[in-house]
Image 1 (cartoon, rainbow, N blue to C red):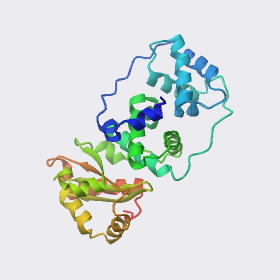
Image 2: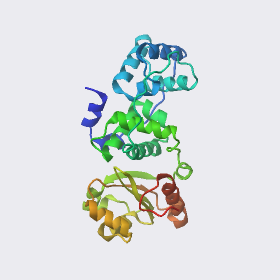
Image 3: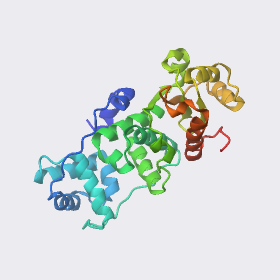
Image 4: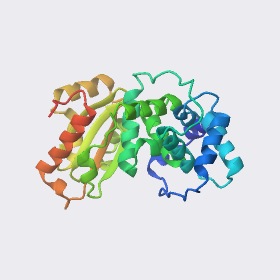
Length: 286
């Protein structure tokens, strides 16, 4: 069974929100040499990025590494490959790179990548290199579009990284405050509004095309109830009515009641940074 098939058989929400802590293994001193030789032996002209993005090519590369170092950690091997490529130390020139990611996949990749990067505070390279984080990223993408190709979505994430569209928002790195990030399909929220906490926070409506609308609230349950019953944001109300909520999901960032997010000015600063970086279609840019 391929890695993609295995991920598709697992409940996406379980993968995404029930992950163990990420532990970094020790890197053996001989690993750079082993990785260079394994890549030269197995890459078949593909670039280092293409080797990591494709399940079959990556497994072939890892098998070659483990033939020399049986206990080598997958994340260490993959990150070392990227590090050596950036340092210009790979001895084989890439002659095959594949096609660029389809523009239609880029919004899905951005949503999935930001979900994982915020939850685990990791960079894009680590998210793809670490097998546990990669499965979480794949699962996050499948929540947005169950039919998306996992290879395409990973490639899109790397493409976004290179264009610096996944640069972390400064306010999100500073404003931790024990926030809880939750994603639910809109129909599920509508049928059980008690899923939404009565806490201050920021909420994001999104679908396969990207982010739709971002807002803030002193009480997330009250505000989302208003939006789902008869939103005072007419463009959002029309969009929800037009789609009947199908394909839409709601992501909320909930903060403790005694956190700085209880102040409207703080929530609006957080909201404005999200609007600036994620460019939701129905918001007026702050």
